[in-house]
Length: 615
Image (tube, rainbow, N blue to C red; front, side):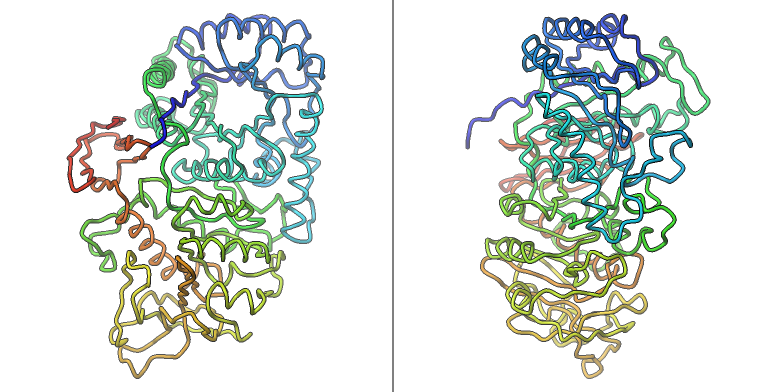
């Protein structure tokens, strides 16, 4: 095994959330950063106010002398910000601070230009000039967004910024990276970090960005009751989960210096603010002493975020800010992402379709998964053993070829017929892949007809991937499963693929319909599995079948892992190079027990509430 290299984790704070004092900045950094053992600061200067050049130079000298990494956040789209930098100043800052000067940043473009509510900002706010108004289709909306973010990237690149940093509260990091961002941050606790961290980690890996971080906005988004004990405990879990997940920088937005939100105020000397400072210091100390292997956690399982998908994961009343247009509201494509909420929770004990020697249903192999952009290069896909499509996708010939190459190389692919649509229109006609490409990948063709039925599915045979354990009855005797109302399926003709599942409304073999609901194709060293539904598996009758198949693939990946963790589903875990395992008990109140299984040996681990343990 290659030499394990230390992966330094930066820990620090944001300056400028509640107020900004340029003259007092250095003293503020001494108090909030240096006295807490931290080494990172994100500076948001006062909006609309240009800072003197000598101030930036003074700051850079101080940061370099004290080995503090720093970047600025001067752009708040879609409005143009006051220009703080030119090429000469950037060059001077870089010559003074070197590696410690990370660059300039763009604050929350996804929130502002794709995922917010129409009334999020006041009437005079910067949301007035929407860049995506009245788009014809998902492609146009995507292209407008990427172009607008790209404009900010060009401003920074033109003057030689060492990095273009981005703070993003939504799932749209992949589009920011596409536009040229090279140092992405996710804003936590906006949304569920169990679901959102895989987006930024998957996007960073796909675009070969070896640095990503989190900004923990706990004052605003950790809960609206500041004095609540669970909110205070949640802050500690947020930091530990970010570290376990592979973040290269962990930044506190506010709360350590004072709290002023939700009609509540707490001074710096309050017990609550002291809690923020305690967690900050403890994280910095842990990061300094721990040697976390490079390259992030081992990950074999990924969901695929499709082309032009605009599900935000946080906020969002319409896609791509197409306010007031009902067809742009969240539909089945976007609601199919609820599959992520299934992960991290073991299947109920009475779920009879949960199989195996142990219950591995909560997490895929090694405890983590990524969400990989479909736009990624084939090399990014080859990192994963399993790929599952969720959300909107507009298919292309290039993507079909890439997925075919992935399966041939040994990957296991699961998707629905809805994900094969070449159309970018919200309510457009279904445009099928060519018969040639469909036959090669899935071993079937579409007749052009669809079947609308409330039948369930019977699995007629085992998967050729013997790790997967579907509820099979080869003679088709038994109740149809997963029926939940009417759903529409594409009629298919098999040409190499096999009917893994068939539609049925009868207990008896003779009563089965001939339509195929699941096709599996052995291709090269891998398998391509297609649920023939032309409806995305959202809030509809397709979801139960899709859910069951996804959850079984999750379990299958964990069953075949070299290191297995089984037990309490309140424990989050990640495995790093060298078999280093991070275990985090997310339970607020009681200890958690897990069993670690590796190389024929078992070890029982007990974790106290909120405990992060390394083995």
